Amino acid sequence: MEQQATRKCNGQDETAAIQTVSIRAVWSVRNLLATLPRMTSFLWRSLLLTLMLGGLAASATGVYLAVRRIRSDLVMLGRWVTGVRPTGKAPRGVAADPRG
Image (tube, rainbow, N blue to C red):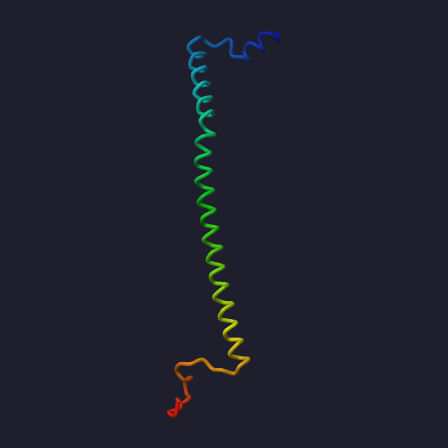
């Protein structure tokens, strides 16, 4: 009884045609699984490179904006300490000094 159950589990009761198709299917799956690491390696590297370039762009943008902000803050601090107003148009509601 135990041997009959083993034969059924192993597929030994199937016909030869089904076994041949089954073996071909197994080999095609094995070939697919053998080539999968190469395909996924290329896809993984492409995805990783894209993500790294996106991170680099975000970091570079952050550094650029931080440098602009710090420079602007330092200029404003310097003007506040020295009491120098920025050159250019007079504020609204204030007449420009004609004597210069």
